[in-house]
Image (spheres, rainbow, N blue to C red):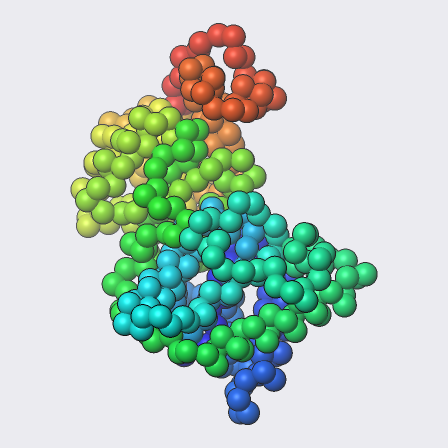
Length: 392
């Protein structure tokens, strides 16, 4: 098992600079560790450590419960990511369990890296220092990503690399953090950044109904996970989002989401949506969804794109009777490649958000900045229109 777990937001690595830094860290660390430590044994980084089609969540669960140190790359998307919060939560729980049996002692298992500045830091991470003496001021103020982009900051970048390598090595050679207990379902781990997650007005609640393999690689043409695609869309749309876990309580959670003026989004692959095992959940959601909900079904490309789209749309209308009957293209989306998935979901989220804000003058008045946002988006704040029908 690797020694260090790299926890980061996939949306913070779109330009590959975070991967390059981790590769440098992997080469640097063995020089601070006992003789014979190999670079390949040091870092668990899902870009390197999980092959396409691998059992993604099982590998994440195993790595978070066994790696000795969690290196957290702070950024605004990092603290909105449910998966990043789950990774941190596993390490926090392991530290808590260790301290319970070792009173008065401490173990260093969380090491922050400022990739892009974000304020405020979630309360659960505020105890972990990130601005140690010797770190360049430009790093503390602007983040490591900024240093990586500027040739004139190469010395500062290398200085951060050296200091972080020494800190991680010191943590690895300190009190050992024992393995955590087996994790039955990584998707059910509570996010440390989303304690008692609750609806966010005009945000999105996402339900992902897909096999682990399809969740890891929904489209064969691109090795990008479903979580990354959803996170990209939410960030571009300026829509706060959270994930609703699958289970007996899912429909009730969706009902609460809609009551709080949040937009439910079900994203499913064809096989999962049509599986007999999932039909009770699908029927419950069909009975719960209102006009703000969106269903996205993704499938593999076909030589005849229109036939593939018609097939997926027919599946939606059959699976989501009565909610699906008569709905237009704005609520029922189909995608056979990542570009269509992102563009169509972004369009739908933006439209639904406009409608929710427009139809809710009382809510706008209670939330600072929403009236300005409504005006910037061309939404009249002097009237009280009715929420448009899903197909409008």
